[in-house]
Image (cartoon, rainbow, N blue to C red; front, top):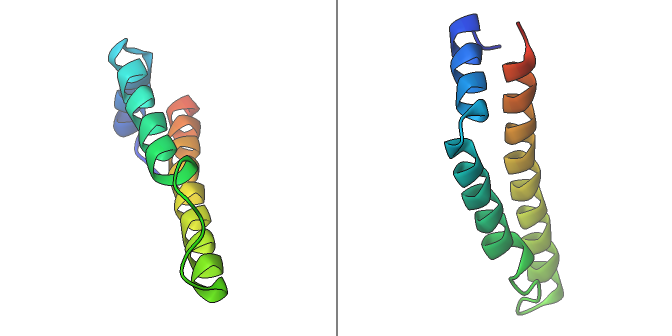
Amino acid sequence: MLDKSTRTSIRQMMQSPQWEAFEFAFNDYKKNYFLETSIKRENEFETIWSASFGEGGKFHLNNFMKVLEDEAQKQ
């Protein structure tokens, strides 16, 4: 997926103290946009659609971080 140079750069970023600030901002974003918002919408269809849309967004954000971490572990 990613070339060795890119993986090395990502690994170095993850090992730096600044990565903690990124993780904090990432988790704060998820908290504000996914965890603390009301799921209820104007009708049942809109509620289900909105919930599905939000869950898909959370899945892709979390999956991106997992793939990034997995790629950084490759040599």
